[in-house]
Length: 112
Length: 115
Image 1: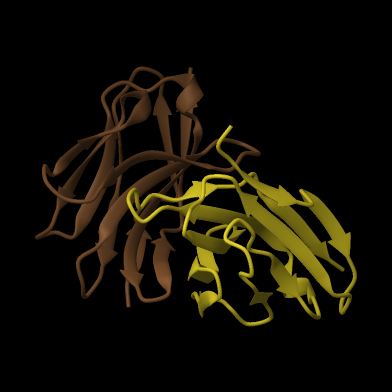
Image 2: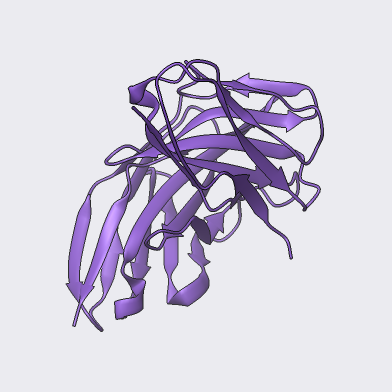
């Protein structure tokens, strides 16, 4: 089944404790992206990637890092999480031919 | 820079009534336009997309949208809604650069269908 998977789905952590949210897609898509969803703000793009080793900042990159060492994986790294990063995070992927993005199920992160 | 404005944060409507969810965008370059739906506690699912060609686009679940370049709008419509259409709807614009797919979403419209 074609899908985007994220882990973990739920995470509660404390300020300053480094964490990684994994994202993997099995559709051989070139493009991958990370978004955060906050009430009233919709989804805002954090980082995106065209292919392996090619990434760029989205609208809200501060406090986040990404890497794209393999085509299928695009982990999101929070080196020192803060409470304002409490949010619902989505990973997405798309191909060069279809343009629309396919979304993972989301990761709900709470930073206390 | 590109931006998307969804003019209504909530739209209450009775079952079997028609509905229109409004979306306006701004961009200095040509864009691709999308509507996504998010059911409670789920991820986003594509409803429909406009890439080029006919300005009236039909999607899943009986939804359609019309691209209006002069008014920079991409409003979503359905002639008769069902209870199961209750969800949050997001309009989005996309453009590509050397690094990938830059997607900008509106703030979302919560459609509440009442019996």
